[in-house]
Amino acid sequence: MAHLRRPKRFFLWTFVVAAALLGAALWLWAGWAPLWAALVSINLAAYALWAWDKFQARRGGGRVPELCLHAMAALGATPASFLAMLSLRHKIRKPVFWVLYVVLTVAQIAAIFYFEGLRAR
Picture 1: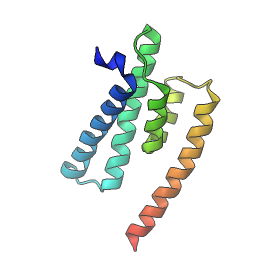
Picture 2: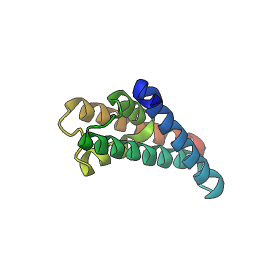
Picture 3: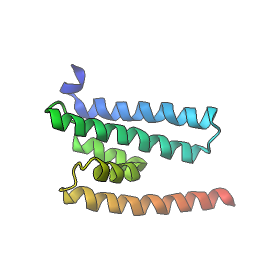
Picture 4: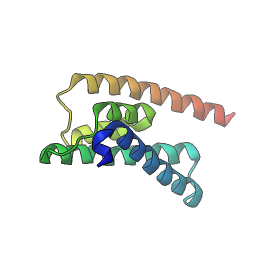
């Protein structure tokens, strides 16, 4: 199985492809604004991978590397990451996740307000 030899590559590509397909569907067919379609699709794809990681943790299978979880959050999936941590009770004892995701959340909220302000001009 290729994903076991290179799990970072496999899970990052899985995330990117799932988010891109869902984002394109929301933007092109549902008529959503591109920014919101991207953010919603990124968060849905990230939550699915968090749930997969929790499922694999319970059964002892191949896990999603932490670097992939951090990368997804950095790309805009901090809301899904927080929701997954709390609802799935996954990775809640790791302080690095909490600190990193709080910093990323503040930065992403600031970026949304900045870009929405530019678009409104």
